[in-house]
Image (tube, rainbow, N blue to C red; front, side):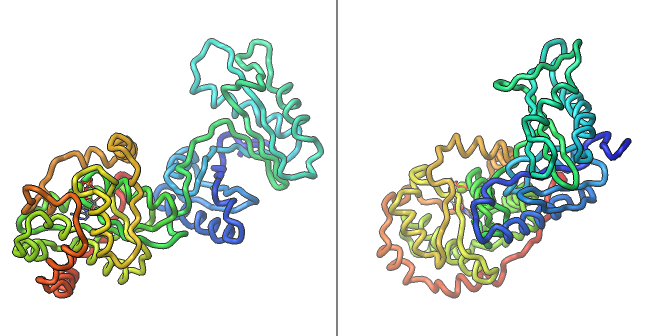
Length: 403
Ligand code: ATP
Ligand code: MG
């Protein structure tokens, strides 16, 4: 902080949240969850104080305001963030503080032309002596200079200088970084995501987190028929997803025994659907153990032969919890675009045999029938297969990569 309490650089991150405001009675709980998640996200990045103040959250990092703001772009529930400069809440201090904020924002724009700027005051403290538009004008008069690249322009500004007047301090900012939106992770409870090394399921997991679900992962691995690379690939994917929530637990479930038993039934065309039904059962058991309320898969309607409505019905019927399919209406290219943005695509795109490619039937059933699934499964000791797989599951608690 420099003279008379006007900051000489960004001093806080102002955090805006959107949808939370719609949650009525739950609002307090959602705000607390968001504060908790913000604290957790900044752990190990920068030491910071986090405070709630009337519809905003303020983060005061010890230095490194920019790094903190960037990190918060990955916290669900946040609509946008701004590195903010502070000043005492008097018209004189505010007008003096304004210029350096704009100058820093200018540094990122091409030089040699006029930049249209709008000033936008939000008076949270209604006792402040000037109305908002009077403060806008006063600040504009103060910052304008003859030889200046700044022109004040209300309709099509390229920069907006925000001024948020609060009783204790006023905040000024010209940068707004978008947040991911959604709801704070954990506020809707836990889900179990069935994650393969493919492109779809990591995106589905991210979308469940976006809607406030804490995600726990289950992957099925057919050791020794499938090499350890398939498992490593899933671990790497979970690590890429980990910064979006606090802890990421992955169950690696051995699946070869179940697959061998299903293969032994002999009805080739039902094999894939029966594998999937077994996955749903085991994942449901993991969910019960971990107090999760739903399963999540990367399934989509009509994308591959196994994803007809009939087959999805057969598969879903084996789950004892609701199955969420966030990608249900996505075209493949939409999922790919998300995976690229998320940073999972490059990992997923590496072709690696996985349990689904093991003992693949030549002609998988397109319109499976539940009665047929059940008749075939009557030849198996399903509970024993489920118990055995669960008993041998490996549980990994994974930390984020790249932070
Ligand atoms: P993905 O890209 O996620 O693999 P996909 O389009 O290839 O999906 P399928 O291979 O039919 O579709 O798998 C459908 C869903 O079943 C996956 O999105 C995932 O949720 C689950 N799944 C498939 N294989 C596994 C596995 N080995 N472990 C855990 N879940 C799996
Ligand atoms: Mg797949």
